[in-house]
Image 1 (tube, rainbow, N blue to C red):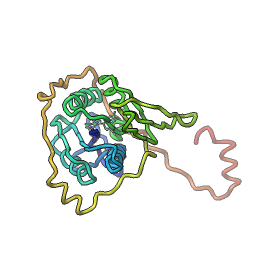
Image 2 (cartoon, helix red, strand yellow; image 1 turned 135 degrees about the vertical axis):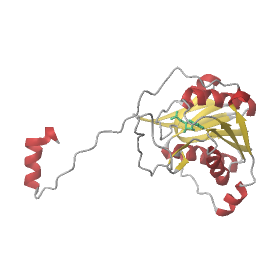
Image 3 (spheres, helix red, strand yellow; image 1 turned 60 degrees about the horizontal axis):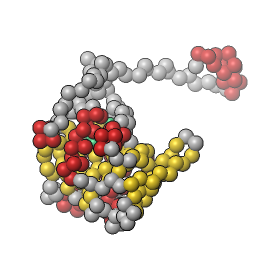
Image 4 (cartoon, rainbow, N blue to C red; image 1 turned 180 degrees about the vertical axis):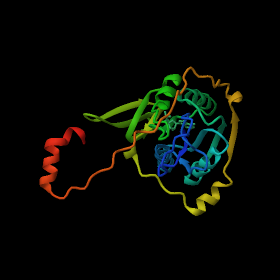
Length: 251
Ligand code: AMP
């Protein structure tokens, strides 16, 4: 069974986000970019499935500008067998990504498509659900544990929900999106970084996949959260209790 993993290149989680002065989006020029953390978890899970004999091949895919190739190289250094880069503009809405993933699935025919539950740049949390709908495949979102039964062609997925744990059984092929607690992604070792340089990355165009970029959705503006007021240092517990009693509504 092949596993396809969708990997998004996003602003590194440790970078302080700056909004562009014209409010059209987040500043990405001269900003450190990395693999979306939830996508690292998705890739790690696929690699563990390959190592345990459940999967035969792990394919990392990414859509966006040329620099996505760097993120895919990181995925190859972590252990993916090959990668596909769909050359596209940097602003892609989840529905477009879902359509592109559907087209790639139809070419590669994986038994599992694993995505991050959300991208930390746009926080959309939509792509996995949309692609499952487009493919008419079952979906296990926010997975905190996945067990694949190769013989039964099924996956058992635990999901952390408000009230506790929900366990689903999905017939394969299926879509899974990963939550933070699913695993701890590995670091790429130096020998694997070197090996990754010779692993194949196929470039595909939007036209080849026959997907139209037009969207009926437009981001009107992006604004930064209001600046927090400075805190105060109190000298005693009595002063704290007094403030809580008398000024709690303004804190
Ligand atoms: P989102 O719905 O935007 O929060 O993204 C959820 C997941 O969809 C990400 O963690 C990725 O696995 C996948 N995804 C979104 N955008 C892209 C992209 N441009 N390239 C590859 N995967 C993507």
